[in-house]
Image (cartoon, rainbow, N blue to C red; front, side, top):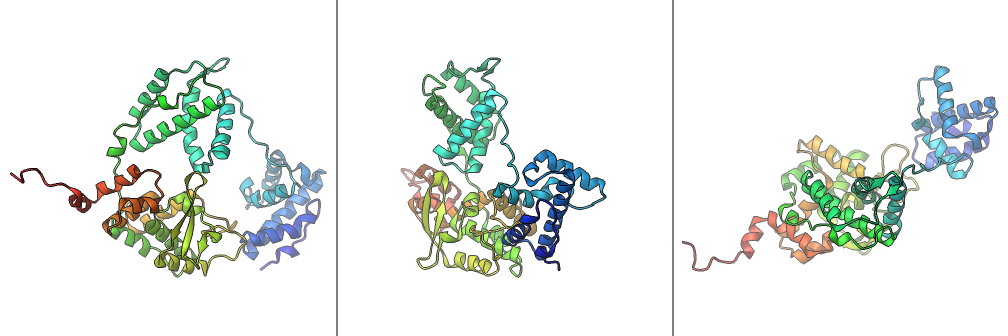
Length: 401
């Protein structure tokens, strides 16, 4: 085992060696992995010195030149820029190496999309995943308004908005159509606020008539959930983490992004509560069931001791919090292990709702746990519980014939 602080570094990066070594430890690199990263740093530094360059000239173009040099020297490892991410990130955070310039919007559509994404993030408080989902329909709509001299938005009519929605929704599944309608309304509000349209057209977007009635959530069966949990090897760190994530998903009905956003400070062990950061920067406190708390504690006992506040972490360096996509991938991997048809995290959310309904919870109580803004959204779940439907059905006048 090599001590990363004993790796000899000469040249312009020598002064950053100790700090970089400490950063690697904080990110959860093993001693051997950290030593390899510092050895790579030493090679970069020698190359910069030979070229008469300093850390401040370590631009993306120079990085590619270094990698070409490394390949020519016969090295077989760390031959791509991904291997330099830790070093470059450290130097850029210090201001020692130049930051990567943000891409310049080269078309009117991209320039406006950049402003729209900023509006969604800063003004509306949407999560990165939601901003990304809204971006596709918005870009599609705007691209159809592009003219040789710019974007034709001031003359936008109700008929054009309606025609776009009808045409696009015919070729889309229900979920995609819902996203398109929501995203287009958001975009049209933004355009009006920016003074790019002469009148508010958000209400001109057709209502998704019938979609809510046809879109019945499909919860995972109890046997399938048990199989997912049983597929986790709880003698390993990964298994304990996956078991805890799955337990949080199916018991509390959290969304994938909400699980990824959980932080250690959100767990109130004294009161037995958990803080959930939901859509639009909302925060809700939910009771922490005993089995959920036990699963999380079992994971935290083995959780890497790194200065990182998210509850659920990657297990390989750099050790950082799981992303929403990683949570989704975790669920699908569990399905594969358990021999269950592939499903996403939202199916476990549906399971939580159905389980509460079967246990006698009211729609209002289920809506509170799932943090629905409208009772109509919660009502979807009663359609998947036939026993609940029977309990509210009225007898046919005159009796059965």
